Length: 140
Length: 268
Image 1 (cartoon, rainbow over the protein chains, first blue to last red):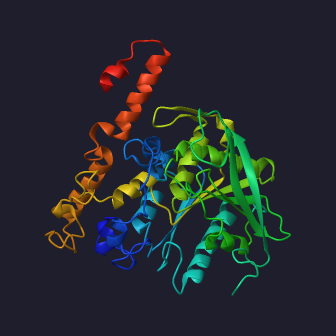
Image 2: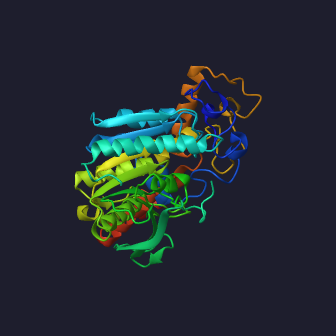
Image 3: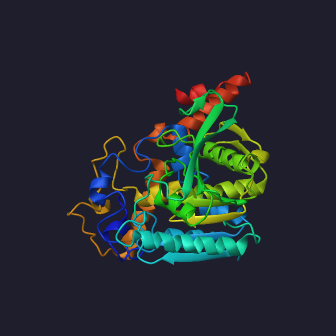
């Protein structure tokens, strides 16, 4: 876990708390057993973690997506920072898309306002579905 | 506010069920079925006595989010929600993304055919975001899946991968390999000796002259070094998975065709 973002709030600036990440103190996480790709088979490395070989790439995949896309991010996200959310949105080639950021929310909507922030995000999704699915087909 | 059943909002029901699908594979790479039978444990959470022809489907490559607050929260707000676990729930050390795509297709197909939902909203939460976007692009392409990046044949026909009607990304990242690379420690010189580190790339070394706030040129150099570590796996050399894997499959293919085994001489 050696991302300059966690130590320097001016890198990919957002509302996150400096010196932390979603797994804890990044210095400890960096040398610890919990994190992405700590254990992997060769096949899995290629399919899941390889910069050159893995195919599950949202930015590339977006080029082939025609359905409506809503991207909701959290400005204090301590895992998927706002630059990820923005890159996802920008990669969708069509205009049938929307972008929303929940101010102050962390990755898992933890913290004193977590419930309200999560409900804000849910409201945005509900509204988007009402606008993009045919009448009568949204949740009742 | 406490729900009577922790994890499931009052006024909602949680139905646990299994989605079973089949595939042709030489072996199982994870528990969760038997032989070529794949069993996916899924949860449908919805308001009691409500009718909807729309369902949200969540899947994360390594699963486990059935009780995430967002799942119950969506149901509390009136939505019908399925959390479908991939076969790799809780353990991604042998995960093949193409097989996760097949699992997601099976869960969507079941929701449309057996459960009768007309509209599917694919909700990609966190690591489920890039999975969902990738799934949708494969589904819309109509090309199905033919192999994995290791060069192994893995066939999934397009009719087993129905496209969703709407995509929602929540707290998502661009890709597993992308975010891993942004988090990789590029100061590691030798994969077999991870505590030998280059001071000038070690963010946690007080002797590193580069300290926050970082010079943008340093961050750029750091990012390049992260990509380089992902691409090369410093120190692994000939055992780099890409080379090893390709070499093995080349060997196998040439052996099967009864031609001269070039792979063997390459290994010597």
